Image (tube, rainbow, N blue to C red; front, side, top):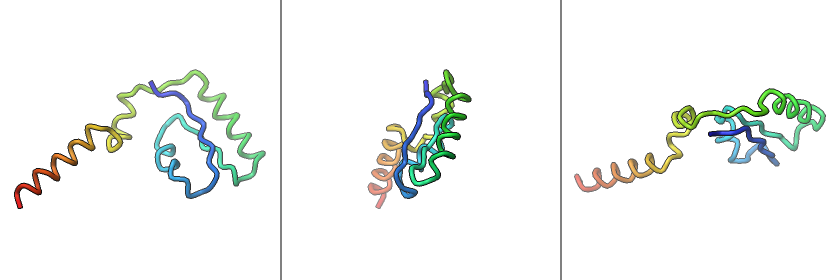
Length: 85
């Protein structure tokens, strides 16, 4: 089961945002933004999501390209293509 995640981000180009922005139970605390506003949003996130979980089956479609099965499939397809040349 997926649980709520708080992601602390130091700069706007942080690569983790690509993934955490897709995760339904995440909050990214942007350290360069107004601290008071970020703390307020963080408190709201915690209150809203305390105790919540998300089923893995609901995450698989979102993160399909991050699974080992997907990677194996890409490699197999590339090998098949290479062998047809």
